[in-house]
Image 1 (cartoon, rainbow, N blue to C red):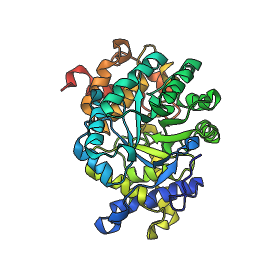
Image 2: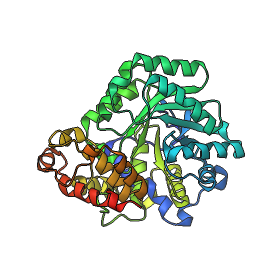
Image 3: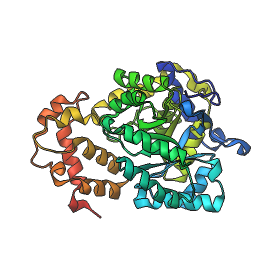
Image 4: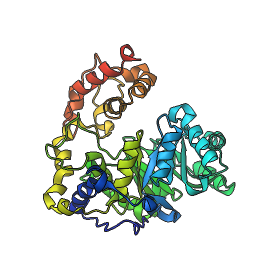
Length: 400
């Protein structure tokens, strides 16, 4: 269960979710005076990671980019004691950068460390850990994930035995999986049933608040004591659209605060590639949910209004609904996700590489009719034009 006793006033009504999300996030963007935090107490608050009993920072530092010593130092200065990495991040260099930091700083024992392997064969998944431990310059990770799990049927008895062996060998403390796949709800539903999943990092944002099946799946995991970490929390910009009146704070902080108001969610994993981003998110985590004039109820509706106004512009990843209506093998969900990386994350090279690495059949766009897919989309996305826009940005002619 997630014990958020270190966080102030964490009411969890849906309206409270949204009203305190904007309010608490505001302080970090109001300027130096409003954002000032006692230098002696800059540690990000902690919460309990489900049945593991482990106290972890509510803000996790994602490392899927070119990590530098300056970045690692920023995480440390801002009191973020939870680092999330993976074997595939930056071609293995992210793990090495994290390991170098531990070696030089001596702060491995103060950090909750997560890494992941994308090969879900139990034998290969087990063997791959040795390379991660070498790169990370440690003899054990706190949490080892199956990276971007897509199939619930891969939570097998063999995988249970594999993670048990690694625990017995003291190479990992806890086991779980990450997923931003179209079957994420099925995975959440399956995890409590197999009985050996300690934690899950999954795609979850304010745009999912009305999804009753998602809510029930999260409830099921929480009741089973599975630690839950939210990722992809920003919910997409919606083509750059922003509320016309978003006074004194930014949407990114508000989206994080919405997650932190949910007692079922232990932490949010955020990729923070600039010092400013690290500071803003850490300050948002440290701020209490009420900030004076921002207590006014109408301010709390901004996230909901933003979600409604941009719903037709953001892919939710439920691509099983639209891809089955396309007379081709086109990977609609993946391609729209890469488009988001390109447009919103500024990760243009990575987005183009990911697109290029798809099998040719899954990259078909120009001669594909997406009309039936658009009709099947429950959120009214103009899939055809969005896919053609993705093609224009991600195709070989744009590689640089």
